[in-house]
Image (cartoon, rainbow, N blue to C red):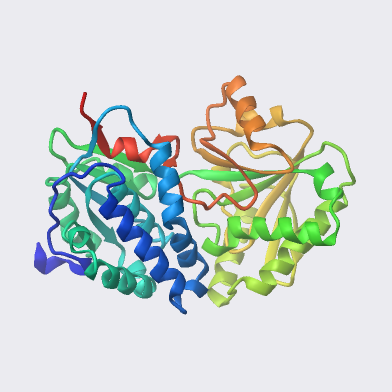
Length: 392
């Protein structure tokens, strides 16, 4: 198999001896990696990689260790295979870090596209691994062709696997046997949406509106809305105020995008393609608006869609409509819905509302600006608990 894959960082075959979760050696490595990323003049200018560096700083890791503290002894499961997605390039680093924090050795498969675009981060990881030989000995970041057969061979030898990808990817992986004791955490296709309080937005002055628009930008544009937690649909809760504030909101979002978003021919073509498909296929009906030139397209829906799968936004294409009360959202919240982003609503109150109403979907309720913040609890699953075992 060695001839079939390219090692990007770490060792050819990791030592699978389990560690305790949040082992000091793992925390020291990630803390050093955080400092290296945030000092690197190239990486700290790359918004998504800088966010990863900030995520794995020591103070954050200590908070996570307290959250996941167990009254019983725990150990990692051994060797974990991670299959990272191509459409969210930075996710390979988060899944690797979480597997390490859970006490495991880690094999992480990146797509060839991610291996190319993430070269700066991979080189920095390899450099820091050189100063942490015990972590390096349990790490392999690699790439290989999807059709090579390596995945099946690795699945047969791993103690756990973490699958990030579409529904078809998850289904294909489940045909590949694991050892009988092996466990799987799968994160298939999901969709997300945002709910904005019209009353709140209408009451904001220019500076406050721009600040909130920047937080929304962080939830959407940096990953071209490809992340499962990035809102495709924006629902206005008509709880007061003047509906004219909606245009001001989108103008403010577009202004941030014009300033920050690296918008090129590829993004423009893909956005137009998705917009045309939505209109031509009759998947949705509504009126198209543009803001900031070509930076933001808005499809005003005449009513809530049947499901979020029919809304394929991206690259600054959003769908929007209004509701008179939160209850109107419930039919839309199927198990395919992952994150509900709130603007002007208290996430804790919305979470309690969804629990009282037995919502079928939504695993995360966050405020604006937090949609893309990776967590050790994702899609309602505790990754640290799932990738470790208790000894009672």
